[in-house]
Length: 214
Image 1 (cartoon, helix red, strand yellow):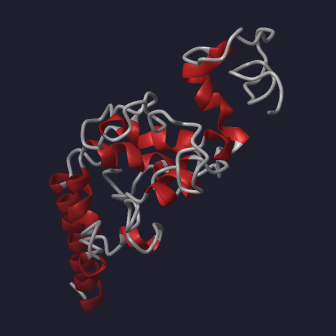
Image 2 (image 1 turned 180 degrees about the vertical axis):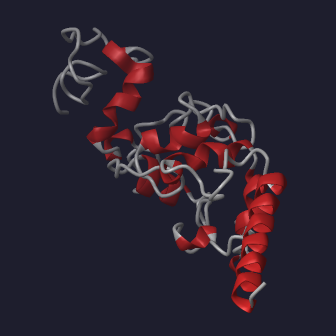
């Protein structure tokens, strides 16, 4: 056997062992292609759901998801390569209401999910459509917010820029508000505003609590 063939055989064996290490070390991570060892083509948009089921399943192939110096794993592809500087989780200081509330959930939806999204709908990816954590490893929003997804009354407190005030919520979030407030449900406002069936939820078109701008 020539030296070139020996090298090729060695590299093929090493690649096979790397694939095996990932496949056996992370059985719940994904269905890896048995030949290439690659994730499915759609993995970039769907991998977050598997991560939530078992975050540790990513570590054999991709290393630490919290410590940049320990990232990379057997694949030498770090989660930090795509996610923000703090990794695939909320950034430092996220517990601050001004950050996860006013600048996060209440902001205009940006179309992103999994820790980088804004708007109430982005929260549902990890915390459930009713914000009660369906996967069991993420905290329920109701652990802090007794009237999740927003704070308890006074939700209309305008005495401070940082106090909960729902008029600071971008109107593009109205579809999430409609889950609880369609046609004025769970609202003290009477009479309940009418809206024709199929009307797109909005803050002042009679689909929620108001029929006109205050």
